[in-house]
Length: 243
Image 1 (cartoon, rainbow, N blue to C red):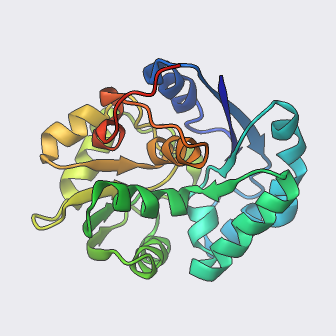
Image 2 (cartoon, rainbow, N blue to C red):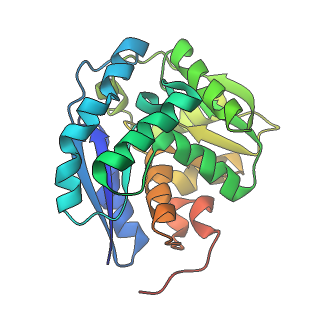
């Protein structure tokens, strides 16, 4: 059994995690612990507070006691808002506090793109344009070439969590760039676990989504590679690891 721990802000699309656990189809357990979101707002000051060491540290012990072998801060905006160096500092503090390997969804996107061998990307964000631009800057610092960024102007994670497959597909179509090798859909408040194959079929390229890459990053930290085609191209890069 491989136990993976996730610090998830508030309540929006956390039901993606049991769905992903089921799709992995192996001896992998995803343990989700909810952090205090504070003010639900895609606004820089609120996001900095949401990702503060105090808020993350307050729930780490619960994950550690659950037997988690790695911990991920399952929030994109609450990590990239700190910038490239600040996000490293955030993860380093989390690792020390938890006594476990740690990462965040923002780094998961960078590592997943590297895994797929893509450099040129497009971004379809639920965020306001200024916050989406910060994600673009983070990925540029990670060595990716951002060809286009489309924001949606949504302020709260609660609203993002109400989106269904039709809205996700519409965002993906609108945000794609013909020269992009992959499309990235940040925001762990967005339900995507059930529609990744449809997204990739529609666009004809890999699609990376927040909760998908977050789980993949936790597996990476524990040296697990699981073949799960229903979770997209990212989960078909390595042969199945038998229990």
